[in-house]
Image 1 (cartoon, helix red, strand yellow):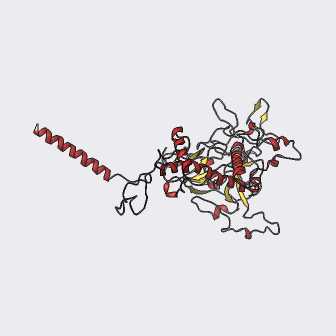
Image 2 (image 1 turned 60 degrees about the vertical axis):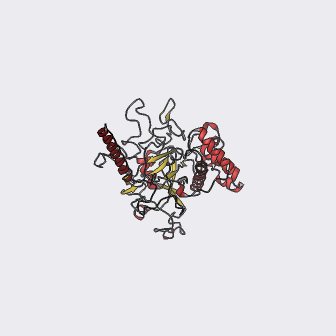
Image 3 (image 1 turned 180 degrees about the vertical axis):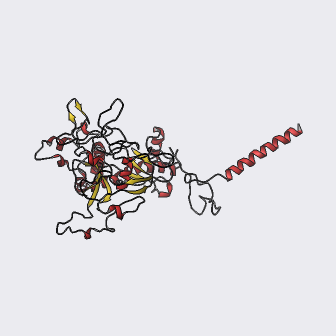
Length: 421
């Protein structure tokens, strides 16, 4: 009996020693940094006021899709029919980021206009209004779209158009504040000793109500970035991000990193139709098939839309993104320069205005050039474009204050830290 007791005690000691050893060797992570500094041994969250709290990572914002970064061949794979030579192929790498699954639709932009009308000046509200006259054409009877397209319930989930690059950026700023408000509510609840953190984006109603009650009884503290509750800002995607997300080469490579093929469009193959299955022969995007042919014949309206179509009406690409080709072209963040391919970095390529290849180098005074710092790139092709412009590598530009019935937008956001499904 005495020997058995000794053995039991020895076994317990071995288990405790193993557990202690495991805990000491436990690797700190960004989400779980531990209680003490691995460099100084000093305790976190002590009297010196240095806070390094563990936290549960907030979910991505609504509608955002995680795009895993990597290298890809940026540039046009189509023949340069415009002879601009402004987008030759080159290899670049893109850091992981988030992108909207769909374009911003009319109902989403009306939500923004409602908030602006309540909280901003009449002048700013007027500036935020889309230009619905983009539908008007002296030689076409599109007059009904001028009054109906933006506000009629039947068009709620059609992509918003008539929005300039400047207006799209203003929407991104508002959306950042609107989504952050939910996080601030959760952060206020946590700061007040409330329930679970991370209550935003569809968590349990009871917990969300408790957090809201806390926020309503006291002013929410100004959260710091270190708290983990500060949402990264929404913004327009860069040209490189848009092209990378659209081409969606994920799944086309072998295990040794050699890719089996390139893509002209956001899907495999060189055609615009479903190659197989029940929907074989139907169009994969909303575009203009040829002169005067926007959709096919009645009863066999192949792409289903004479003008724009509801978001999510066509198959998503391998990244889970809809309408990265067709429906509406989309604004990106970059200023336009014909030399963007040689002036940008090969990591997270982005063409900002006022740096290298400056606008003053172009002869706009004598009308020998259109290049200014107000020109912004748009990509993706629209319902009114032929298939050539649906290739993600093609690029066009327009003044940042201009708008058309063919250009809309979607938002993107930086991915913070590592990503786990």
